[in-house]
Amino acid sequence: MSRQLTVGFDLDMTLIDTAPGFADVLRALGGEIGVELPAEQLVEKLGPPIDVMLAPYIPEADLPQVTDRFRALYPAHAIINVPALPGAHEAMAAVREHGGRVIVVTGKFKPNAQLHVDHLGFEVDHLEGWVWGVGKAEILRAEGASVYVGDHIHDVEGALAAGVTSVSVLTGGCTREELLDAGTHVVLESLREFPAWLEDHLR
Image (tube, rainbow, N blue to C red; front, side, top):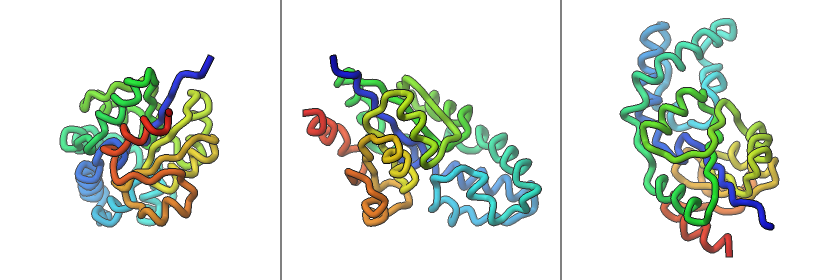
């Protein structure tokens, strides 16, 4: 008997347009701590965990406290104003139509990721947060995923480390060439193309 289809999705810039909310949190955080954080520049690099992104701008000794404050500020600044990306609901629905499970594996702090999932009405069977790059592989294997969809080269790394099909979308900060060089199997313009791709993939 064949194993049930399980498809993993990244969250930021794959399922949701995190940019406006993320920038708002950075501005609020910078105002509190008296550091001018380059919000627009950092938004273009979404993907890594917040401690990795802030490390160049915050003294190492202060980083844990500052990242904790980022996560605390996040719900008030980055949930209501963050939309689902075009095709996100339809991509997950396509997995369901094939009797599959949907999992979300993200570098985001899990409680904040859950707020996005709940606010946007995403039907998710499993959500795992605070995992990045090859660290995503363990979750993908444990959940029996055969496909992982992301927007960043580190999402590709996680998929390849797990031995699953890497599907990349161009809605994040990485180019087609960067994603292909990282080894992704498929590049889609957006999740709007995912249902048709999945149909072909499962034939």
